[in-house]
Length: 382
Image (cartoon, rainbow, N blue to C red; front, side, top):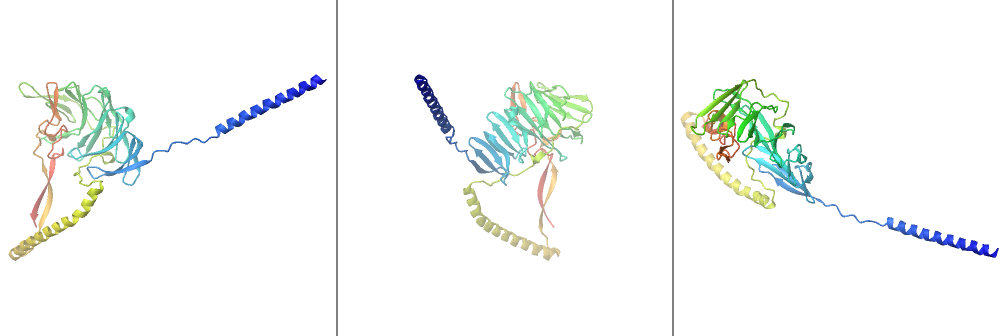
């Protein structure tokens, strides 16, 4: 009996010891799990005021190493997820849009925040092509290239018109009017191995590459295609016609979406404080000079008016007016196009492509900006 009592006491003591060890371990684990973890602070968003060449005011947003954009009212128009964001305003082609990059991949946004070409399509180059025709219609599209040199064409809303292919170039030809008054339809030009052909606005191939070395031109009419080549030895024009029925009806969008296209004069404004202080102090001098100029001009005009009133019996005044004149610098066969390169943007000499030195590769007449006519300001006395 005595041995049994001692054995029971030892068992009770052993149970108490095991229980105490388990409770101590549980308490230690609970203390570890409740320890606070210090999280790193999130990087702040910085805003930098920017002014485009056309006077468009926007804000560059930066968070860490990524960039986005906001409009003048502070509304985010491009999310902060790109490695670079910059605004393009070209006074020669009248294009206004945002260009973004995600490392090596490029994309395009409108100034209102619509993403035309997202970077996840993995294009390494993309740009808007097109222009305004003499009748006021605007045709715009996007030519894109990937890292393998393949090209695709999209409408201005980001819909694929021509899928990736082995093209050297894809560009919008917005049409014109020939010397006989016939309408030249808008189309999409392509180039393969130095030979040019055309698609219609639905992405349907209208002809195989028939224009050699970009020395001539292709015109699309409603009832035919006109292909004009130049013989490289005799430099004689060789004309070929392909009959058919063609139109500008399309399910795609090539219009002036989000006002991407409009003419402008480069702005002299700047976002820096120094330019603001200079501009604020200069008006006093400018106003004084303008006042003196206006006063002298008013004196001269009053003397003229007094002399004219004494002779003719009524006071005349000088009036400035505007009128449209046909551009004489355009291609004689295609209004609105460069006379030197016939709207092709350059020439091939052997296997080397040379950009036109007159239009800089745009194919448009630099005198009228591709309109076929230009505005003239003149003065008269009334």
